[in-house]
Length: 258
Image (tube, rainbow, N blue to C red; front, side):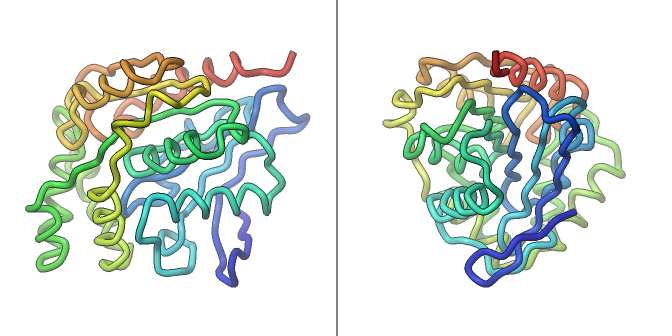
């Protein structure tokens, strides 16, 4: 499990690097607000036959730092990390806030991407005022509320407990900063300019990023195709890991070197 130093701060990432090197481009996974690389299940982090990197953004998980205040600042972190580890071109997959980061990179540095995978995200990420207020004044209760909203139909008590525990392990100021960055971000007028091949994955029962918002992405990104997973919510990759892993593997294989 490697670390790299960026701007004097240690950044953690999980690496799955099969030998010999696959013909498919490397996959880089970026988590959502308040999350860590563990929001991507093992079926995706260690996707058989593919090189996969799963990041902990600054201030999250095992990475040092205070977190970023804007989506574009997180985009720059991902680019600096890619430069530091020698990735000139890769497929970028982002969940929720990570999807906003991925869209920013696709809009500003498209030549760095072999593909884009957007999971439970949208072109605008407005945050309910109840969440923002709760993160300021009652973070534990708000973490429990987010857990209830994050899953689709019939989450297990263990899923909810694990979500709350992992979220509260992130410093409260970092979580609030993430959600404020999401709330301020809006690329609805720009996503039609995304030109890289794009796969969009959404949960049918997502209450944080409802399917109608995901559909906007699918209708406005010219290269996009999308899939809606029944009964899954915002944490679709944890709720249907095998389904999401297969979709990602197929997308990567379509980008393979010939």
